[in-house]
Image (cartoon, rainbow, N blue to C red):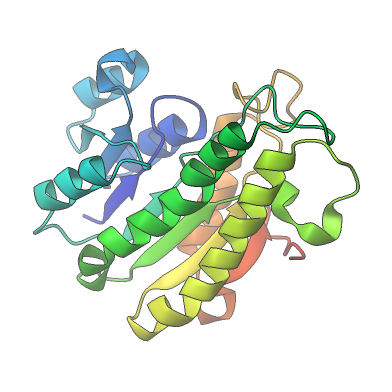
Length: 231
């Protein structure tokens, strides 16, 4: 069976990715910061034998190292960088910037994904058709920025896009594909109740991109429905 490591699985998109892939026969390594509080994820693991839950804070080098040791001999076919942070008090204008919170957003949304790609590259090298996916956002498209809201989140996702675009050259030489995806406006805690998509709809769309991935999509940025997004 194919193997996948997913970050940010306690709720929302990460939980839905875990459910769909495990139900379809994938071996799922589902991670979150606080497994003892992730009751829905624990329930999934209880009924789906191919799903296991692991502690991981993507900003914590010790956590990443421990999981790397735990999965040292496991090939990975898919690394799904889904963990993300959006702060309710994200700056909307100069004068309200909290630089500590901005740095924390970068630590999770940008550096976290790069840390995972670096740590689990040996596992991806052993995968059958390995692919590293970054769940980004259209808010990280510099061409689409027209307002000053969500400064921390927008800049962190733009940086994620740039980092993954750069890593595509390196990972491509290792035989590892890179895909950057925008999940759409989803009804999650982050997206809010007015979101246009359910988590199931969004993940099904992103899965189609993963399943149909080829060299022509390497290092590019797509909406969940397959529409390419500008940088």
